[in-house]
Length: 146
Image (cartoon, rainbow, N blue to C red):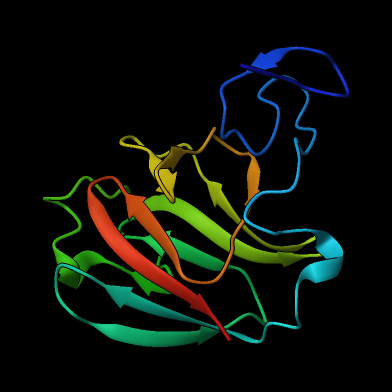
């Protein structure tokens, strides 16, 4: 177990942000806000389908499945990649640029989001390093920052 410097609660090893107070728990895979290069695009490789695409970071990237009844079209729509069968929620996760760098946030998905084999706490931003493996439910996506 590791302790949060801000609130002293115990956290599982590998946790990036404290589940209690949200404090960043330390340098993970060389990430610090100062070490992040200027990122303009994110390249995605969806393992199941082999589909590749690149999206800009001018606005947040919603990840999930299209929901026409709710008038929701995610920028990264995983529907054609077997998202339903792999447990991807309609509004599963979001990638956005912050002053601290690029972060990934699970948006209360039904089947969870994993960043490099670490399950994300709901609604907590996690630094997103380049060359990451992200599971949205069971669907594996490789992410590269450009």
